[in-house]
Figure 1: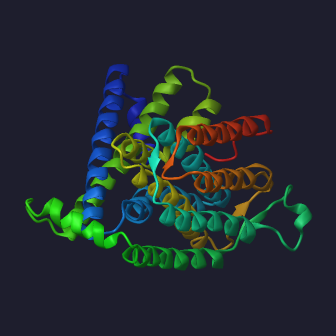
Figure 2 (figure 1 turned 135 degrees about the horizontal axis):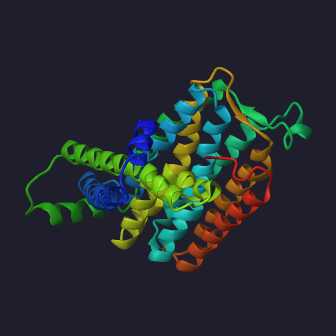
Figure 3 (figure 1 turned 90 degrees about the vertical axis):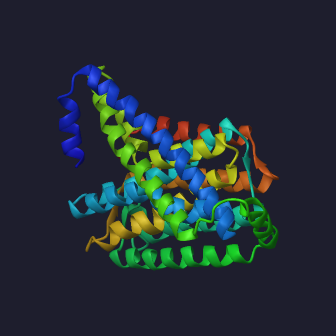
Length: 352
């Protein structure tokens, strides 16, 4: 499908190409509005906090592009590309996307839930590094690297099911749940009743619109960049690098602008967890030899991934009810540092 879209856009006149980009952006924005509306509605009617909805249902939908790219890359014989996509997306989600959302507007926190989900997020990142490390020959980590075994892919997928189940169970035990349910009844008692399955179906449809429009937008903008003679390295570092993270970006920015910061934070935290358990897990599970983690993973990708996740953990520790703009600038600086270091290394950015 991607090749077909690239060929289609390559044959378009400039005017039509520009029109397609504008249309895709418009649909993407409307889809994000719809997604946030339905996520908030599901939270209010089900009694599940928005941060949990963002970290589970929304994150599963918005990480689908990363999972598809990584699984297809692994099946086509590029296991290193598959793992690089997952790790690069974690860096992009936490550094760039959460950083931008914080700069746009302070993000409201439910410290208890975010702290709990955040430790799972950090633990998932550490686990990915630990199981990929060549413990039998540690001196080769920075040269030949290591790999993520296939059996760990199945372990990650089983852990994903456990994480989703436990997130819902934990959310039902939150002390503010009773107050939230009372507010829900008071808010919606005058509105036409809509069942949770109907709202969930609308949420899934909204996610499909966001993901689909993003899949159209990225190759269209890439084609426009080529026609403007933008270097391929710049395209790789920007458009392609966070192309699969575009749904999370639009969702987080839209949620932040509309005052649903907890949904934005939940989406990013959940996406990071799912990039390990879902994206890397599924890609490893379909690859008999596991996923390759070359030396550049231990030189750049893994250290910066852990650094960005550690910055987020510190932000939670020192924040009260909101993640403030200075914290957003710190995350953006960490992401910028990653881009600079990647370009200074031979071979440029090690992920697509």
